[in-house]
Image (cartoon, rainbow, N blue to C red; front, side):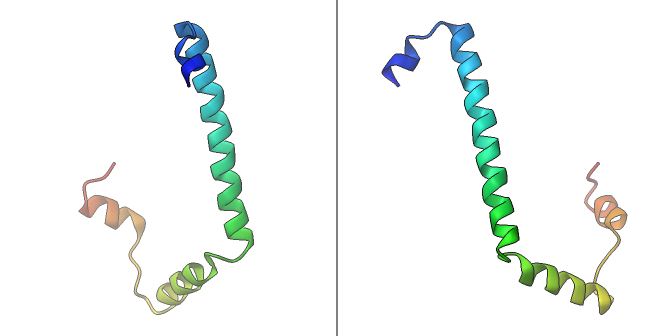
Length: 69
């Protein structure tokens, strides 16, 4: 970090952009690994069951209700 603080602004911003891209790739990979490993399977099963039971709402109704655009 001491060396990073010495960088000129343009180089610091370029480094930050690269670090951000690498972090995003790492997050995406971690998420993909969890999905592939079935970590979220119970959530999907719950959602499908609730939909089949008629306990869901159309997305546009939820967005309208909460005034989200």
